[in-house]
Image (cartoon, rainbow, N blue to C red):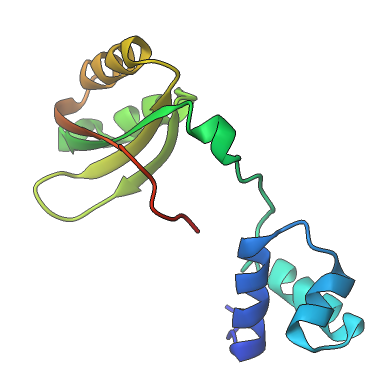
Length: 144
């Protein structure tokens, strides 16, 4: 894996802030030449430090969603099956393996409380899921 130095760290921070920034804009912000930034970007892509660029949704859209964290306890023999089913659910936006009393945490989003309730029931009823515990996100203070 590529060893990231302070320039790479700064470049990654800039890209997290705005992945659509042009190479020239990144170079200006970092005080580097355009060719240096392009070379660094190419190395980060080739080494798979950067595997893609994505969209960050605007507040006007995300404020209309109801989002929640779902702690999931799994039946160990069915972990793979449960993960595969969760991955197919487009309202599950992320799934993390965690330590502690639960095995995973799923990030979910819905357009209404009714839809969230149905989604939580669907997750809880998947084969291999023994128990869930959900927390609705009331407000996002910041997100990177």
